[in-house]
Length: 602
Image (cartoon, rainbow, N blue to C red; front, side, top):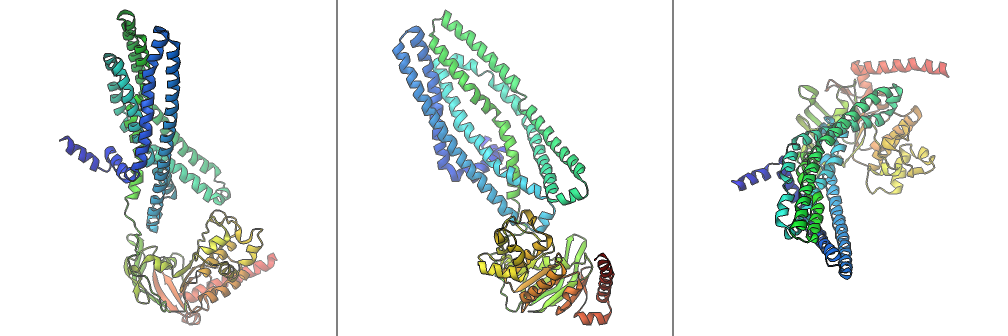
């Protein structure tokens, strides 16, 4: 019956015992030899502590009963040696446990980061990045904290308590029973606090996530915060989150220490009772004072490890909150699983086709509706139309950042859903409308387009993107750090570095989503020349709101409400007089209206 109950607890992934068992099997088993060494050191330290308590009685007897100074000196030197041994053993166990803990934290950080990279954009769209950061920091350390509690409780506190209890029993068995009358009430009191502490710890975690979320959004959106004078609003929001965490921390302080007065009172009662009993034995029964002193030394040394063991259930359950958060994420099925077992994409002509494709970001709200078109090999196909029509979604589907709900997308008659995702993306150069640069040097950001690119390739790509001149104007040139999200560069400079990153990739399929949107007219002209070289003999899909940038495209697709409503070359679409002609006339009119204003301003 007990065995079945124990197996049920171990197999329950949410129970404290089940979580501890999983920690021991997943993290402890592979490190058992290092844990064994740490246990050996802790055993030596525990034995040294107990032996010190035992010898303390000899010092008293030799000094006050036998009045033998040489024996006192010998025992004192032995105690000094024992303390040194305990110090070395404690140092050894702590260093080993710290190294084990560091390796566990590092392993968890790698596992969490790997799991993050296995999720698709839908997953990230439903969560704030602050939650991911909190899971990475709290969850990664939680496994080490929980394991350390278990290991030190067994290896340090339990062994020390056993050793000291042995000394107490040897000195006076009856007095040993009296010494531990305080243990049951303390254990019962702490059990009642476990559920309360778990709830408060979970509240602390979520409050910490909200605090980090506010901080992160304020830093990333600092231009908006200052432009719209939102400092007071963000301060109030941050203060609210911090106050929530502070309140939870104060509750935890009250809960975790609520049994303190009870523990100390019972311990004081036990010590007082022992003193009365021991005094009676020494004065009236003729017992040696050394036995009393040795017993009391062992009892007082045993007090702290006994108190830690009594609190173990409470402290462990608080630590397991983070472990649950860790395993909850690690156990999540990847939404973008590894597909390296799928055949690689083999591009010959790079003929891209959408065939009756449907897609919706949210159920019941289709973004792409029964879309069909062909992007001819080695040609430029432009996508134009009103915002929200689905143009950028087309590129997202080609990259398989999202999966189609219906229909197929093929490249050279290969369904891209059936090939390895990595092989697909490795053969595409992409420049998005939301330019993202990593906090690295300009050289590194360009080289991200093709790992292993030579210096000559990087410089050639930068020159083609009209970025070389402004890069060389910086004191550190290509070694200039761009800052977080490229904050130290202007919008146009970031765009040109991103284009250089796409150029250096030298892929057969090019996707450009408003790739020249942030450039001035002169830079746009030069980049367009570079893009024309990049796109020569390559299949290119380009999205542009400024129709002047795609007038020479081989095919223009008009996208509205997720469908291709018209297609043709620039001149053909103008002659048709449809929506494209209307867009073109509106832009031409807007440009003519802006020119007199610019002239007047000049």
